[in-house]
Image (cartoon, rainbow, N blue to C red; front, side, top):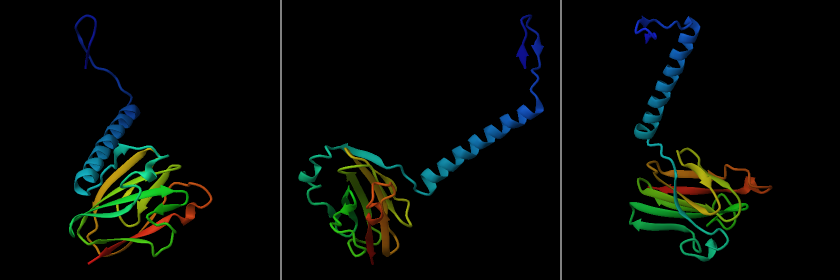
Length: 175
């Protein structure tokens, strides 16, 4: 209902097809909002955060990046993993081989810190919700828990040049 210039109530006419499209759009928005809520709170999906800014030209000379790898924060419970993405491998994997691994006990909380020294890379751990960008000048941070023992391969998900296919490694989760 709307009010005319004389103060009378006037019923607005909306075409039935247009009314249907308006209802469909509202329904899609409601379904989207519910999906985002479920993904964020019930499935534990999180957005990686920018931990800090760094200089990609000098980061390899600064701790902890001058010695990337696994840091045990709380024995058997909490670990930090520092990875440098470079053309065309992840460091600490100085040679990209399937047996170049990071080992962590099952059930431990693991925080990944990943940055790039050259171009944009991706970082995805297969079979998990860990998937984010490694951008020069930014340290990306994401925390996860591996409950199941086994080997989890990680790969670069952004094409970074001719050696892109060799950018992979493994996270070993032990019992």
